[in-house]
Image 1 (cartoon, one colour):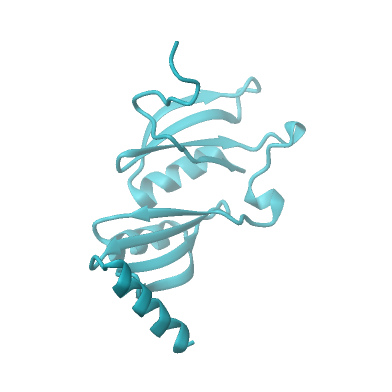
Image 2: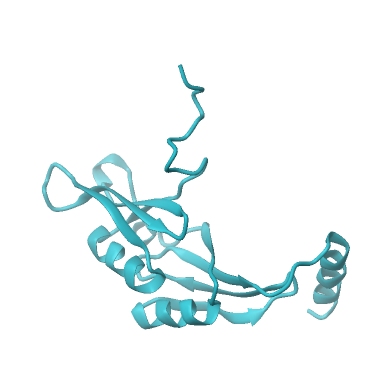
Length: 156
């Protein structure tokens, strides 16, 4: 018998599951904004909502489904926001950020060169989920990272 915490081969150990109001529209947005591929879609018993969809973004899968208020399954629109940010590393943060904004994302933090060595910015998708988008500019040693963080704090 496999270990209870082992994931299927096609999944990572942790897989985001996004609840949204309007899953079909969200899937379309994730395709246009981030280049996600839809792998699977299952309709809910009502035939209108999406009970389960699997998307692939880079080498990672994530799940998307509609809200089910009767079962207490609510997305950011119903909850007034989310404390979670999904971090997305890409080859070209500028192009990805622009494509996401053009697809309907809102800029929360403009792209900037961050002290930790990334080109980094934060977006809110039209369904209320936050995404940080980054490209690595340089790899820093722990000592360099600590020094840059101190400089950054001192300049605030």
